[in-house]
Length: 307
Ligand code: CP
Ligand code: NVA
Image 1 (cartoon, rainbow, N blue to C red):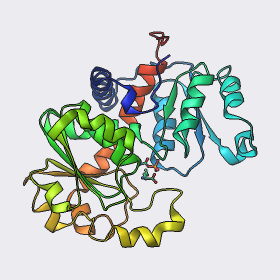
Image 2: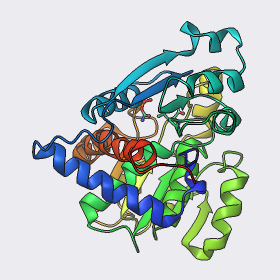
Image 3: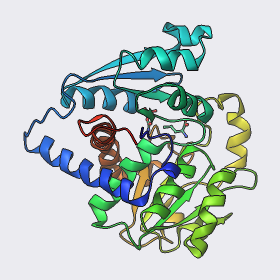
Image 4: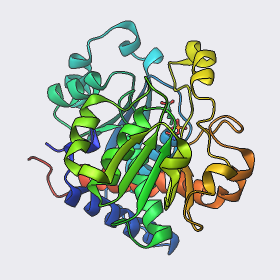
């Protein structure tokens, strides 16, 4: 059974297959071609954290594909009252054709996959955000016409976004430089993976150095969901880790800027840079819909998923 638990599990070929499918689904939607690839199928969407984009894009995407999506908030289901995830997986596998889950621990997503019998899609954990990064790669390829040989730069926290961007960039032939303060590096599992790619990956302290000759510059919030208590401490640690005109002056002249959103203007990105690149950033948000439709068709479509 194939899942999307983290991009580390997917080959470069699988990532490219889904990106190609996402382009096709976007084309079909823009040209009024309606194909019900998931006719009669049901997706459960478990949310233990807040969401605007992930929730709406999965729900609308499933509708457009001919299926239905159920919003399962943890505090309104027995999950929030402590029912084991293993039992939840075995029950929901008997009703649904797939589950998207947004939660804290990566282990919970892996357990859901190991104990259930339907495809599981990671809609964000503390460790990674694979759906977002598929949409990011789709957006970069849309604007630049390719991924191979481009340079990505990420400035900020070694969080779920940085982890997934490192894996997604390297697996699609890009190089990536990240800049983060000491103590906020990406996860060890990601560093161990990236070491194989030699000088295509580097962790720096200086945002300007990381942005040098970049084709795409990306950032994310300084305090992720669940870290609200530490927001003040983090704001001090991340001072200077901002996408602004000075940092952008180091990137290629036609460099893109992406942000998974929500954005905090004048923290990780200035309002000016954000607005200069708003077209790219909101195309990126739209592409969540197309990329996730591709993920669902790939995992839940009629070609039986039983590897
Ligand atoms: N970027 C992203 O995942 O947005 P939401 O938190 O709104 O789903
Ligand atoms: N790093 C952020 C991403 C939000 C989409 C968080 O986890 O809150």
